[in-house]
Each structure stands twice: as C-alpha cells, then as structure tokens.
Image (cartoon, rainbow, N blue to C red; front, side):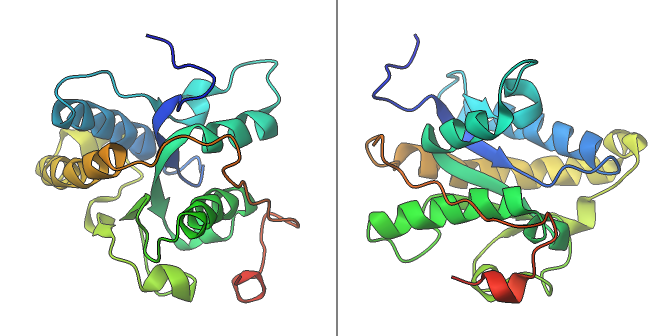
Length: 196
C-alpha cells in the first residue's frame, strides 16, 4: 500500500557518514537492522531510507534527502567523529532535534544512535545521550561478517531494533511542515561553532 501525500513514506531515516572504508559494514548493518525491525513490527515490510538505495540517477539528491527527512518517522544515526564533521549528517541529526523541539520533547525521543567510534569528539549534546555502542564490532574488512564477532553484533542489533520499533510506534502524526535544518559551509564544519 502506497503512503498518501499526507503520511510518512519511511519508518526510519538511516543516517551515516559515507566512507569507502566503512561502506560495506554500513550496508550490512542497515540490512540486518531492517530485517530485525521487520520482525519486531510483526513481519511488516520496513520502509527505511538509505541514500544509496533510495536516490536514483537523475534525481536531485539534496531535495530528495530533505523530502525523505520530512517523510520519515524516526532517525537511526551511526555516530562517529566523522559523522559530526559532515554538514549533511549534522543537518539530518539537527532536523530531527528540531522536530523534537516542535513537539516539546526534551530528549532524543525520535532518534536512535549507534556509536560507531569514539564518543569523546562528539558535540556535547550528543555526548549526553544514551546510544547503543557497537564500536567493538566495527570493521573495515568484509571478512568480518563471517566471524563470531559479527554474531555478537547481530545480537546487539536485535536488541537495538526493539528501541527503534518503539520509536516507530510512538511517531507523532505526520506534518508537512517538519523542519529541515540546513548547515551551511564546508563539509568539515567546526563543531564548536555549530552548537545551536
């Protein structure tokens, strides 16, 4: 069933910093999260916006990203120092933070973070948030997915999918005017200057 223009198109917006070294790991995590979330939602097809799957040749990707942000119920973000140095990633996170403010929510009530690496070099607002730590299971090697550590990561993602399920189920009614925050400047903005 197609969503109406006055409804969400996606259950989840999957926000991550694209990098050739971690791209395969990110793909695998997104696929497993989609699978486990589908189980948590009773077997229904999970609509997840992942840029490399949803932005097609000829589309204007900035506009497509902005529309997908508005049309998503919640945000799953893969946090690392590089994530917060990307104007696009930072904009995606800030957009959901602004939505929470519009709703009068004080916490990350629409955002489920996975910690990919570090935590020390995050903005203060992100440092004070509960995240699921998968940093011990990150790898740049495709062979990782055939190891026992990958099984441990799957267990974490199963538990994480319960939290994401709760965000999807508690999502507020769709609004056409959900804010989308654009962060101007270079792809390497100074975090200290960007605090809102």
